[in-house]
Image 1 (cartoon, rainbow, N blue to C red):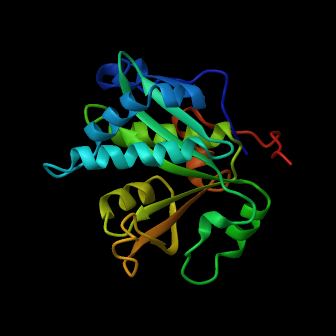
Image 2 (cartoon, rainbow, N blue to C red):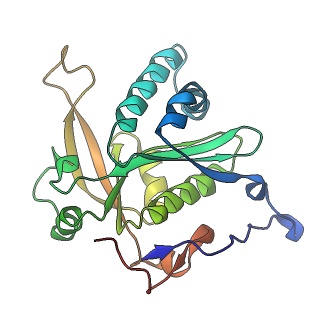
Length: 229
């Protein structure tokens, strides 16, 4: 099981001086705070996205709808990285034991994933945002590991659009594993009900891989920490 040490050691930049990551503070927001700051979070989404000209407003509204839906989920949790402004954000919620998160999965779900889901040890990360001026790869990874560690998750889960190979490759480089396809109705299902969205299902086993043994980004392995029942 992963656990946070008493103090994080900041990464060093060139010449042994603290990097820009050292200036960032990680802070959890509760539901009320997330609702209050949703416009700021939407601004961060627009700044961090690769929206085409003219699509910014539509994508912003879609993000706000997703955030509103996620906030209502049992166990919703949101973590931000900030200095003088928001630099990054990650949020999600525990996957329900009956496995509705995996609906639309193509073929049988891997047995280990099914067992961890039934035991309540899977946490879904549904959005990861990083400001383009931040050290995006490292910050996104740091936020994800911290959120999963805070919830004592044995397995992280996320869905990535199949066409977005850049995001998928980034997740894979951090130790996530691609376990198959998920097909879901699109946001335009009322207009085009025959066109489902094709997603890749990715999972991150915690406490098992080399990324945990090396306790990246301030996370350490502690065999004395027990999973919640």
